[in-house]
Length: 397
Image 1: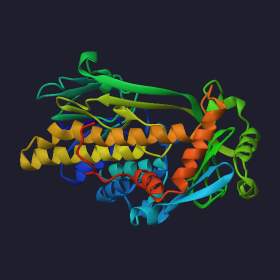
Image 2 (image 1 turned 180 degrees about the vertical axis):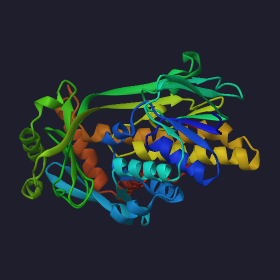
Image 3 (image 1 turned 90 degrees about the vertical axis):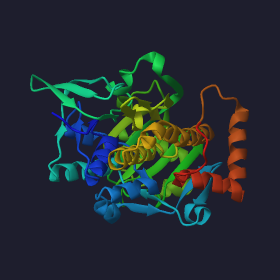
């Protein structure tokens, strides 16, 4: 098989890149090691920045998102028993975010790809990338007991943190930065109305909590828990009781409980790979970086990678220029490190760490009090939360 771009990974990054390339008249084949049903079964982020919204529109798959997505012009922060609203619209000159689950975004992209008859190979075994440091890279895999090969001009590594693309790079050619946090997020999805019309980020003496949502009738809640906890140990009743302990009186009154649709515990880490380009292979999304979910940057960073990579590949074919692909890693990393900093800072500010001294919570509350009563402090949170402009700054990180 011959194509222009071989995309490894059929998550949101790979599917979005494939759709954008298709709209630009560039051929791409997607190879995925698991089934499409498994991909759709992953419960992930649900907050879209404007860059992600715009890319879905550019890809021609934004109609359902605009119909069903919930536009949020702010969010609330609860600490020391009191709520404070961050007015995104006011603080950023009218910018906002949209609540639209990653599962739904992925479904839209899958359906568009299937409707266009574009090739996607699911349940591909033993996927390998070859000769990406030359001009004739190729991807091999096994399907239905047969060995297959895809010759291409470029390889897009959109196969996540545990994928084969980054793992195939010699250790001497790559540098990895990582911080693992000593707790996880226990998430619950339920068909119950959200406790608030906007998200609530909670710093409580019992640990962090987040009240999020997927629609007007479906809620997503999170609790900070020790890494030693097992999801099987948490009954629905235990989850709701602990959430009530971390909320304020209004939250406890307004909270509607019900059976869980899904529960899982996600560990938190900050992780960045440098560089993101290796000859004719490029890493995008979780293959190149992970952020803690505090602040909802993961999916949006992946979308930015995809935009930069799409633009670079289009420039290569349409203008016979390698300027974009040469600058891909630098441009992505400049934005990645800014988002990593915000997610790290926000995580430090909102969570309780093991072995913290009593004074630490006082420091947190004092900083939060300052931020909520300072226009510049509020702007700092708001402009990072909605996403910094794509051309923000010139530093390479």
